[in-house]
Image (cartoon, rainbow over all chains, first blue to last red):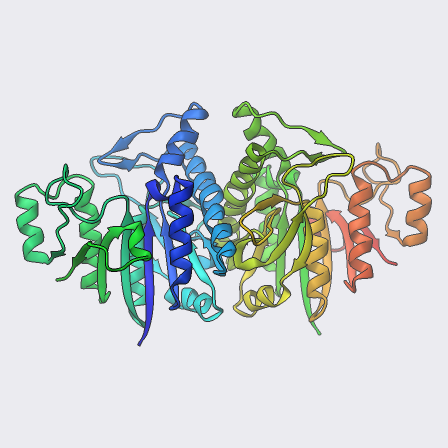
Length: 258
Length: 258
């Protein structure tokens, strides 16, 4: 099977122009077919603040009112997505920016209200792998922001880590997929105060131990859950690494396996 | 040659939810391949005002500072484009939102400073008709907002009427193209105070007379220039019509010819 690289970059990379330029340059040099997914929560929060709109987060998830959704769509699908797309074009990668609504690539449903009403937050139902493969066959580099839709006219705010995991899984039908979560740290750390204490390999058993010992906690828990979800849905390799890893894959990082 | 419909809608349609829903429903019913281009200047001006950013217009054109460009990109490529794309998906049209940077579909250059420095305003150099045809062949309905790029990382604000004319012209190589400028009036009016005084047919000679008599003035001048540019570049038919025309093509409207 043909190889496919799926990379997700977080806000800290996107919102620093030098980090972003460096990442996009390295990413563009990868010869195999590739897909990029980006977040951008910090920019959305900044715009909300400038507009006097309240931002409320519960467990790191944004409570998305209609007003917040407009801000999310403007920031993710507008400002950040087009900055990344034009940056990739500059590097010679034929990027195409996408929300889940574009070409109906990601269908989602409104998260049901249980203890918390997250508002216009969508959970992924289906990734249209055929449409994405159609773009890849045209030599296009799809660039996804964290916005999905319900095919009934409603857009949703959806977690970018989850989108990356779902896309990587769906594409594994026809590709040997490597999934990279790129962020500001070098990987999952044994000691949060020691940036070099990278845990180089985590399997399900180790994950369970680290969770029990609370070495992995807070925002790292859903990230690792997305990693293992992807592995269980036939993604070949999953890595958590610094954004520089894309340029130098000898750098110490975390590799996940079942 | 296969037929292709290219329609441009202005801000007054986009910014009124009922008008937009009605237009998108009619547009979706058209069986032949189709392309939509949209403006949205009013929404950009509103966002600028909320953010305390000054909007300066000269001859109806926005002076686009770096701050204004961000606002234009957020509004056109984010909020409005995704509202239209998700609205078309609801109607069963497989819409894909595009700026000129996406898949490198519209290349532009910064408008040279002569008497006025328009800032980040781009003039179209090239429309990538092959890429657009690739999307049409996938059953996709391309939806363009009024943002282009220079392939060197710079986005531009570009007039939506001009983009529509340039796209229609470029696609005429392989399609029999009809171009529709849809707006809130019924067409070009003989008397601006009489909404029913539609001039049903304008050729180059009539255009010259109407211009001399100042029946056509201000914003109508560049719109008509775009129409004639398209006709001179092999677009088959050009119409200026009310948005309802897309549902009922018996409605009185203006047809242009050379």
